Length: 378
Image (tube, rainbow, N blue to C red; front, top):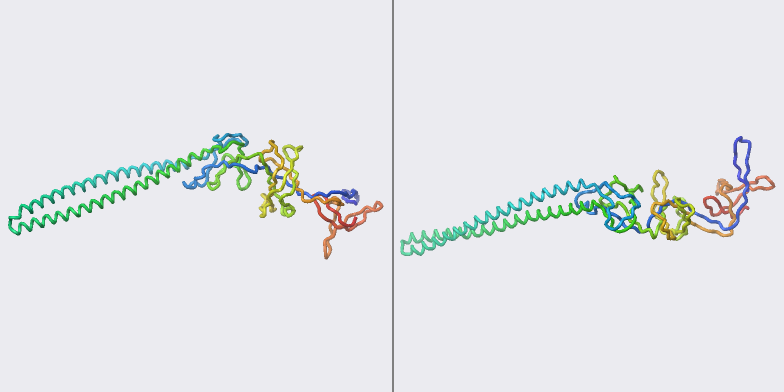
């Protein structure tokens, strides 16, 4: 079989002849990927920032990626200016309400004290009028009646003043309760601000290696990055005992990739090291490849080998074994030429017969990135 390549001058033709191969035909899908720990602990910032009205937080300090930390070690710090301002405003508001509470207590105490004095005075007056009635029993009927009227009048006033006093007590209690409720709410708000401020200094939740988190577009979160209050993750502590390679397969090849397929894995950092793995997840929905119109599908490959030198973000080369067909006759893809007919698409090769190329139609089978199986024709 011959493949013809034309070089200058155009009248010269260089002929390269290759022989078909026979044996086990391997069909692979190759891709590059990035190592990631299968399991990890998130290092989070202020989880309750939304409760105090903060939606975005900027990272001002962060330890170097790859640093080994212990539980409670410093990892990062967020910009505290906004929450400090809120805390100061809350403190001023708390002091204002506290002053109102003190003033309301003093006012209530004074008002009720005066009301009690009035009641005591009316009580004495009531006793005086009662004595006058007893002293006037030998007086003229008109004088007796006047004494009774004065007594009844003071009695009604005393009863009304007593009711008014009870009402004033209830009003004072209600007013103090309202102000005290506002005081408690503001105190709780200030406690939330203080708690959130403490969360702006981010500490390691466990022992491990600090790996920077990624934004939605794949960029690393670093000093100067802004994190969302809905997902305030600044870094992770990966479990390096089980690693995965995250790769993306184009929409042409994704139909071939299935869960459970074996994978040969290489490392760009150490080309001599060869690893094995299996496909554990194939995305059902594609996504747009950055900087391209191409649709790709995420595929996760779990590394079978345990290797302490594997680190997150290392670049991998992945060969996903799609199929292995024994007793196959196959040739390089460059030897195959398509020919469009009315009914079907045909393929042909140039077969070398007695030193001359002869156009020969063939039937092809499975193909990989470099070779194709010939089912009929040669």
